[in-house]
Amino acid sequence: MAIIDISLSLKPSFPVWPGHPEIRFERIHEIGKGSKANVTQIELGVHSGTHLDAPLHFLKDGLDVTGINLDTLIGPALLIEVSDVQVIDAAILETLSIPKDTERLLIKTSNSQLWSENKTVFHTDFVAISDSGAKWIVERGIRLVGVDYLSVAPYGNTGPTHLTLLQAGVIPVEGLNFDGVQEGGYHLICLPLKLRGCEGAPARAVLIDLDK
Image 1 (cartoon, rainbow, N blue to C red):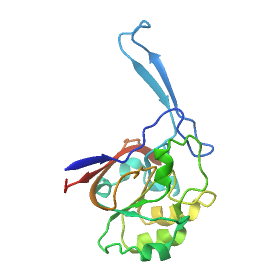
Image 2: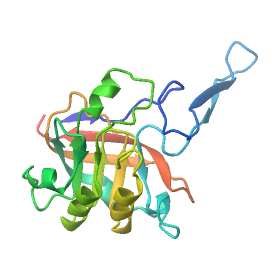
Image 3: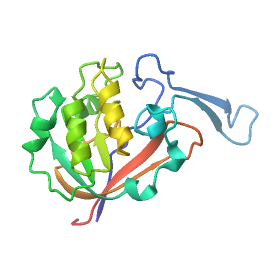
Image 4: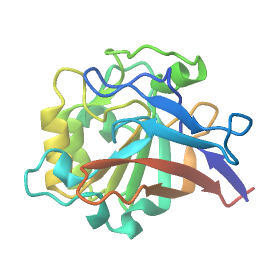
């Protein structure tokens, strides 16, 4: 069995969605400076780094993070790789031979290369899922979709994809890092911070390869 960490390491230089809070760490107590222990204060938005969206993100009366069923976030997952595309639409998904019983779909694109290169600026040209792709995901009964940049939806047109997914109860997990991870079946564990009243939360996500 092999455990693969597909989470991003948060740090102050990490890119954030334009208009969201910058990530800040401040050591407010420090050993050697009058304190017996180190204590760090952090500041960040709930959509920083690896995180998931709850329905409340785009739905006024949607569930917050604490309302997401954990059995959606833990279980068998399929990782597919999509190359040389800018937008993932229904036509592309239809060509990928995704099994009909897939409930958790993870999509690796060229975005993951940005994380391996430690890019510190936000890229607006990231690969994302179109509304037709989101509708395809909903129609197939997929409960969770994971992507490798900070939004499941294209920059400048985030509403339709998010609304289609979240209205159907599909949970987007964003900011995953699939660099060096091969396509195939895995067991996913993705646990967000339990933030009551929040529309999203940072998460730690891992894949378990049961064949190793």
